[in-house]
Length: 406
Image (tube, rainbow, N blue to C red; front, side, top):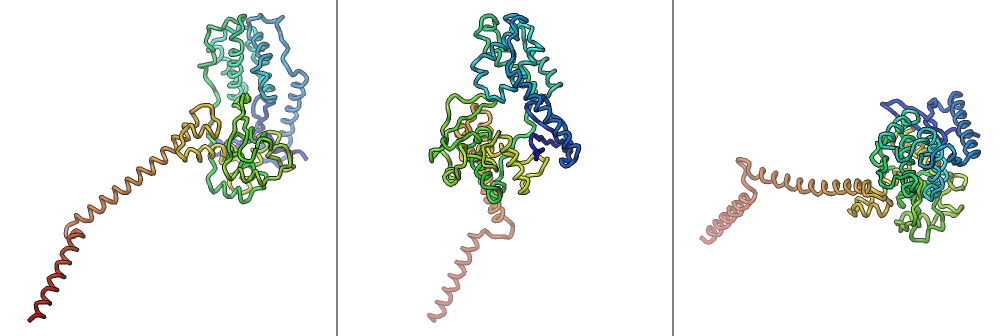
């Protein structure tokens, strides 16, 4: 039976829901009918899958771009693309990233390939990426920007391009894509219910994602060989498919350590799907967690609430609340820059300072209230009332003693 729920992307704009087919083999999103049980939906989804299959077949038929030195000059962008394709920087990319970049390089060769690399200015870059954004979407435009940046980086040392003394034109170029809504950390009640009701394989996935603080793509690759009983060897994959040169070692917090000790080892990888096989990619695990959240009533289909990546944010929030600062947050999540780590640390500091200030404020309000009570007209201060009562009792006792002596 064909699974027609993969590669789906939902968006809600001004209360209206939209459903799209999203796959790296296609340049842009394809709108689908909302009713997934309708004939129209099946036809549209199957049509998208045929386009994906055709793209994959075409990519296998011509896996690399053939050098075209006979057509383009040796200092052209096309020649620079050939140099980049043979570089170590390109070779260490993931297969999926290579596939995407080859498509981008093909488009760059067609549009700008004849021009000299040194003549590509920031204006040329921005005009090109603006056109790509309109035709194929903002994320594709930014991929063109990234690829151009790497071509320039690789070719700086090659004298035929004469760009050693020039500034990379992509450095200050405008990007197009922006995250409209950040992923939300999972509140404690969501975590508790998920751990009570979810299948064991997804419970283990939740603990690994949360307490390793790594991305889904890194977690699905973690093997039992990476766990030594105390910690995990982590090989974080950078944002654009570039794997870190040296692995990191992370000690596991107690909940994760105990879960790993109890978990059955049914495959080489720690995480497995319902068929006890490794996950094909992080999107499959993300969809599984999302479906479980919807089933448990913790999320709503078509509405942006809690997702798999939110567990990485949960870990950052947990660590930041310990007061360890940006350095502590980075040591857990593996962020390379201080920007995002500082956000979590600053948020935790604000909450901690806010709690301290409110405690002082409450104490000051209580002091003022006590002062106001004591200064009301017709009401004696408590210490004065006590003193006069004691004096009256002393007078009464003295009078009784005098009467008794007579």
